[in-house]
Length: 351
Picture 1 (tube, rainbow, N blue to C red):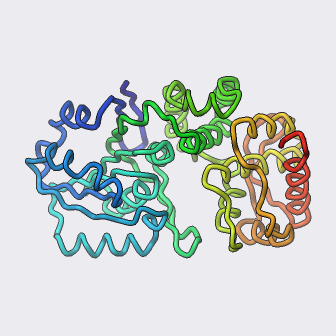
Picture 2 (cartoon, helix red, strand yellow):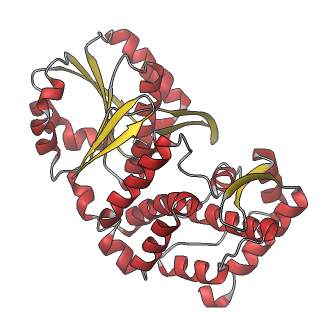
Picture 3 (spheres, rainbow, N blue to C red):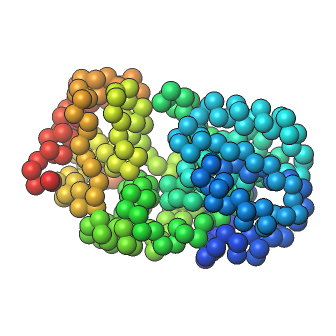
């Protein structure tokens, strides 16, 4: 399957195929004038793909930058180290940047490519659904000490999909991907949202079916959003960011923070604008898909509210007719939202 995503400054093409080897060989003409490849990856991916990539790109000089396996890969510290490395190896004008790996690796490569936009093309090869979502959205965040320090919107020249994503059998991986799709669907495409919820009844369905049958619909939505120059993920994003940068000892899991953020966005929309949200049905459905909805017990409500307010006084919410707006919330309103969430998530029939 091949799909065009038209963006304001060019065209990105997303290819889906069975193997990395098939992708690279079939589209080798794209690389014929490339003299150097800077491959950004982590240690695990390096060990898995080193031999294959070395054989595939035997005509090019390969430069490897190996970053940590952890989230630290998308840190400001790692960006500085990567820039220092590139100064030492002296990239020439015929270089290509290849980011292959999980979400932190893709984000680091994305951010780095943005610094040299239109000088060095970027090829992203995501190896997880989360990384695929980051590749398509073109958003790259850098973190330092748990804080968001930078965000760019980068046009990615070409996105290759690692073949193993076509048959996902890991629940946590499927949950991360599903959460990303939901955020887009709820914010921008109600038909896609309804289709997604109808397609998955429990965690077994989610794990077995993953998101692959819905990629075409998802990409069509992304295409539309890029043409409108709109942000991809809005509802719940502010809540999610504030909670994932919380300074407590325990943070939200990566596959639940998006869902909790969306739910808080629903509650805020209902209380502020009277948006019709079947919160009990929503939470029950989400729990059937295997998500953990509880906030950490060592988080005090007042601390959560303070953190939300410090992060941003304005949050995206849905109007009564379902349109996204950005509105300011007082601490008292945020307190009501958090207390309502805790009340709903702790009801016995969600257990």
